[in-house]
Length: 290
Image (cartoon, rainbow, N blue to C red; front, side, top):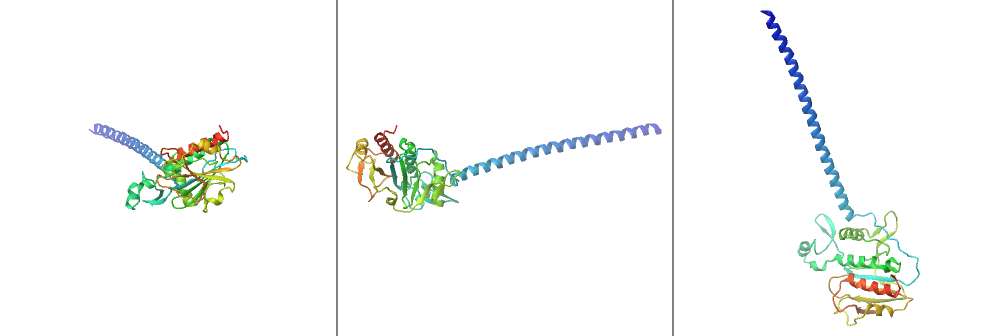
């Protein structure tokens, strides 16, 4: 009578021990799986955080840039050069939301209307295209561009060095202009040279004494004197610097008291960038710059 009971009891103990072991193994496996899942989730969260930080850093670079690169050019030439003055550039800084931005008609139309301003007057893309046309010209590559001066609607005057490389996208350009108007200068990458800097008015104190200055307008109604740029530039003396003043505004007449002549270079309305390209082409032909 005792023998079968003893056998059953031993078997039960062994089964219970095996069952306990299986439960422990299952729990251990479940814990390891949960740990692995947690590790994967944490890795994904870390990856998302790092990517978010990188995006924030890239966005911040458009507003705060340590410097901009320099384009190599022949600056040792002592021959006469070309100087551009861009008048009435639309570069106005305002606090939109929580950040300061350069106002433009596309992104800030509602903001401008709420402040009783005409969105059509805020066109910073005009001065951006004008600067690209000047700095990418063969005249500049040949080292014959002396300087570029930009005067905003608010009367702020700043200088752009000929060997600066303007960003290829407007967003980065707007970030540089914002930094320039806030910090008053932009330095070169890895150097202390100021490639863009705010200077004191008037612009005439920076123009060469022995120079010819003319106001070039692409609008037929701005001037009654319509000229062909090749003939007009060819008549200028070969031993003087040439200064051209171009309006960087969407509309309206620009009054300048320091120019020698007021001309129109086309019978059709042209953009500032196209006017500059015609001027640079005519000057390049005069100086045999290919």
